[in-house]
Image (tube, rainbow, N blue to C red; front, side, top):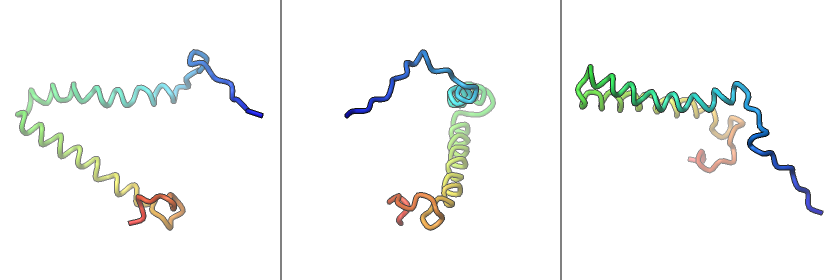
Length: 86
């Protein structure tokens, strides 16, 4: 006996406000970078702006290891993940 689940058509799905925020937020963040670059080029040289973007991106990425330390094996999370077995 095969059990099938009913398919939900996309037009039947009602988006909650949190869904709209989750949809709009990445677009706003990604799109705002173009505006900020255009404005930044009026105030800074292209070379300085490039280094500022790299420094800002690095500072954001450096927060990732600090946040993921709590998910290492032995703390009750992701104990079977081979990426943390180092």
